[in-house]
Every structure is written in C-alpha cells, then in structure tokens.
Image (cartoon, rainbow, N blue to C red):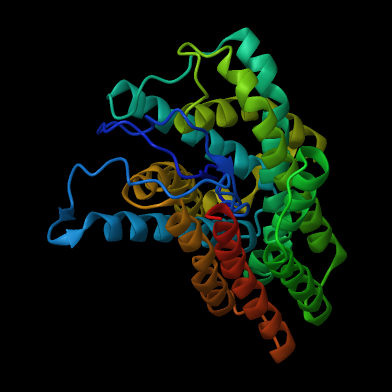
Length: 363
C-alpha cells in the first residue's frame, strides 16, 4: 500500500547517474504493488549499469533487496501505526506522511540527487487534479482498510484491483487478454471470496473499505494512462512526467484534499487529545513510514534500472508472501486452514498473473 510505489513497464532510459531521469511514466500499482502492467512490451536491457557490484555483491541483488524490504516495511509499519497505538485519525497520519514526502523530494532536488522537478503550473495542476483526487481516495481508503482488516487478507484483496483494471482495459481501451490471464484473475477473485468467508474477524466496515480501495486503485491506473499524453503537452520538456515529479505533484496537491477529509471525518478537533502523540514509539513508527514511503520511489527506480520489467513485477508479486506471513505472526491475526489456503491461492495467483501477462507481451 505504498503511496509512491508506481509500477513501470520496461523503458529505455539514458545512462545517467541521476535518479528519475526516465521520461516514461510509472503506472500505479498497489502501495506499496497492485497493478502488474508491463505495457505489453518486450523486455528492455537494463538502462543504467554504472557499477555491477557494491562491496562484492551484485548491484541488481542489492537494489532488489532494498526495493523488496522497503515495500514490505511500509505495509507493516502503517498497519502498526494504525492498529497498534489506538490512533483514530488515519487521515492525519496520511497528511503527515505526504508532507514528509514532499520535503524529502524537494531536498533531493536541491542537492542535485534527482533531475529538476516539474514546476507548479496552473494548466498542469488543472489536468493533474483529477488524478490527485483518485490518488487521495486510493491511499485514504487503503489506510481505513488496513486499520480494520488483517495484513494477510489485505494482500489477497488488493489483487482484485488487477481484475477490475483488466475489465476496464477491455471495455474502455478495447484490449484483449488470453485465457491464462483471465484464469489467474478468477483465481484471485475466488481466493478473495474464500478468504473473506473464512475470516474469523470479518467485518463489513473493513472489507467495504477494501472494495472501495480496489475500485479507486483501478480507476487511478486507468485514468492515469489516458491523461499522461495530455500532461506531456504542458510539461517544460514536452515529455511525460517523470516519477519524482509525479510523486511531488501527488503528495503536494494531496495536502489540501486530506485536510478536507480530516475536517469531514472530525479528526481535527481530536488531534490534541490523541494519546498516541505522547508515545515516542508511535512518532518513530509514523516517521519511519513516511521515510520508507519515499524510499520506495528511489528503490523502485534503482531496481528497474538494473533489471527487466518482468523481474521487477515478479518481485513485487513475490514480495506479498513475506508481508502476509510476517503480518500474521507479528500482529497475531487469528486464522484457520481455509483462510490460510485462500491467502496461499491468492498470492500464487498474483505470481502466475505476472507470468501470464509477460507471456502475452512476448508473443
């Protein structure tokens, strides 16, 4: 459930040590990794190979582990922050993490670690604002779902956004998928239903938010695809917005929207009385969540520059397995054989989905 984890297809970037130099956009995936869309392109050669080893370890392994670890930690830290301290203002937590991300992106720009961000322009903001509304809705609903539903079932249900996105591809963009892709998608659908029916802590509130999150995740993915060419007409270089500019725009423009949500949900008057703010452990967890959310943007670019889009997507799918296992253990979530089977089937379906999509792309 990563705010900034935006999955990309195989793209060729210029060999440059600067982060965020790609002119191709990253398509959104679940937060942390939900939409494994490789744009139906064949695999590209890794575009940036400045060094093959770090301290004797292959760079591709280092970058892959950094990407996987940061993605795992973000989901678990946010679950802990939302459910482990009695904190009742998830929108306020989201506001803090988005604000921290904005500051970190700007700091990287000032120190020359990334290429200059797209400046705030009225016409660009107008075009991007619907994207931002979907982004806030996607991340906000994921926070409410994660607060009420176990980590294992969240990982399974997030796969449903793949199914909704595929349906959108068919009806909106006229795309066609082979039976292997649809088979894995129906596996995801079946595992989600099986998991919900066997969840001993099932509640309509949590699963309702998870279904809303799937819809907004898919809507964000589908709409972003259609708007990127329009955005390119208004950028300073007349190219599609790079990832760090997308991260900057998404998080900065989210702040006023989240403030409205904080007011609507009655969180603002309760902030001064939240006992979690007096707990150093909560402040540390919340801060680490914001830092790791930004780290995903860096690590995803770094990892993709060292490997192919297929491996990148496959690692994202496999990454859900340790998240589910650690979540069940750390948060001592009650389960049963049927519920565990649904989690295993759902995670396996996610891996097979990536392979089926790649098989279609290479034909």
